[in-house]
Length: 298
Length: 308
Image (cartoon, rainbow over all chains, first blue to last red; front, side, top):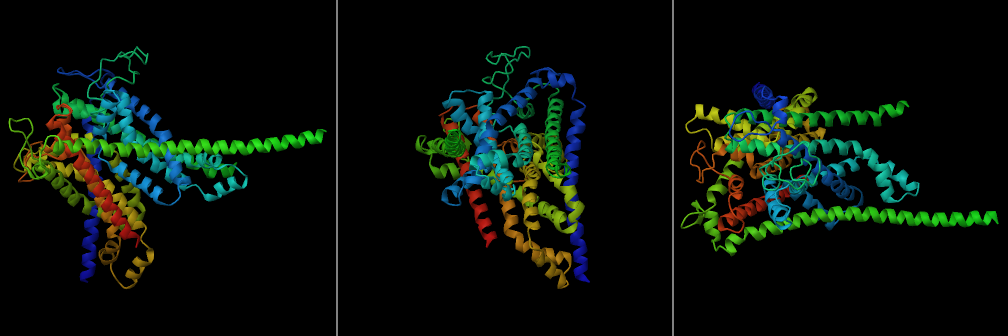
């Protein structure tokens, strides 16, 4: 009966360790929300940070993070979908395809700090864009593009091949099939993946420290002229994001309530990522239902 | 007359439709080529720029390669500047290996829990947990590490709390999702008949796991471990916040140390482009990049073994 005892012990250990992971996540989320949520208020979310005195907020940083996310997705999504379609529908197995696949793999495992350094050298210095939202968005594009390519490729591969064959039988061109037959079917998976990748972009800091910069100019939220330097919409101004702000106040924060601000900002960051996760899940399920059961009922 | 007209119109329209098809395809193809080309250009220029800046330590500042890789003194701004990067290289390797050692057993247990022990609700419970863990931003991990793990270590063990152990603990939680999801994929694609024949021979579940399931899926699980190590090696801010940033090779787990990424994070903003100090930081970025290549190479080797 020794084998049975060993089996019982092993099962116990595996279950314990698996539940430990659940406990770690629960502890993490609980700690962040417990410490942070009490500090979140409308004032905290909208007011500007203060260097030395207590009571500063994270308004500009939150805005910068969201604006940067929009800019990044505007660049990444079309590019990623294009390259993803190529990988799924056009690439023939061979050396070149293998090489592109290797590139996507290497690019996606690059440390984000190296991407940030590359952005500092090429985009900030050589292109002369300086520490700006555009520089940050371009660096994040390098960081996010391989993921987008992978998401698109998988989404297109999961479309049943009959759909494509039917299109060919109708005499459509390949590009027409891709855009009008395959793309709508692949879209839910692409959207879900994009929202999840948005969470990753939203929390990224290492690639942004040396591209979007670690400071934010005084913003005038009444000024919506994108060319004015104090306008929040100006894409050529430096922009410290929420994640970079958390890092900065943890390492060199001087305000007496730096720890509370860090906790509040972390909670905001985590809540936003949670929302992205939930929306992606809900959206994926909704679209899936639309595409399967409800259509059959009509 | 009218019939003829119709005929010619049809011919014309079919002709123009063919042209339209060609144009559509051309537009589509050139758009995709542009995207793929951009991907290639971005990686080629990244490799080029990081390499060209990285070797300037050796080419322009005449630091010998062995001094850089095996020198233990880091004082880039001193009267006799010395650029020994061994403390940082050692710090990166030690934290990465420790993190992998902590995270791998946990991840494998989680994967077994999800696929072998309770495949139904085990997966329903742990899948979202793993996804959420991978979604938490690294600065938040750093913040929690700084405000929970560091004080805990300070109270329980000698030292200041910050150091290699704190860094490895934070990293291990961060790479847990990577290893777990790869291990789950590997375990769930295992052919059923292997398991069933083992049970048919009278083996217990643990015997099946230890002698059939783990050995068969080991290359795939190792892929996950290597991917996790790649993430740990390149992680910058979370580690930098808890490791203490002392430029020495740590002699104990609770001693302040530095990694390649933490030194770059702290130094890059305070040095001018082209100075020897700055160049040395770029050389470390080059080391990070080469390690990325190595990790990808190992993953590919493991995947090859898996397909045989």
